[in-house]
Length: 140
Image 1 (cartoon, rainbow, N blue to C red):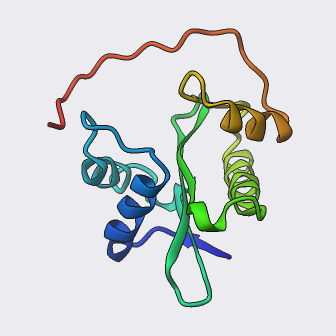
Image 2 (cartoon, rainbow, N blue to C red):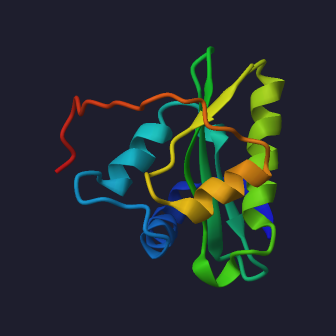
């Protein structure tokens, strides 16, 4: 897998990847999420691609000057368990450290034990916090 910044031509393949990985939700328009990310630090939106150039992985990295965030970390199911997600996270962490980011946060849906184990293997721990959200703009 090679890694590069997301390009607008990657949108359809990236949304299909997220759908294949079960990351999309009916109340969240993934195309709007892409549009929004391209307005804020688009260089922190990465895709992994195979030898044919097909998108097979992604990670959306955020940083607002206080904390870094990970969204849409995905590896196509047929390509999982080969170290691709680990490589994307290593690159995300490096990009954040280069920007002076002191801490990286991420959210995992409750009950997703495989993902919890993956992040634990990378050194992430449960911060013992409760995540809350409020939709300010309805996508759908």
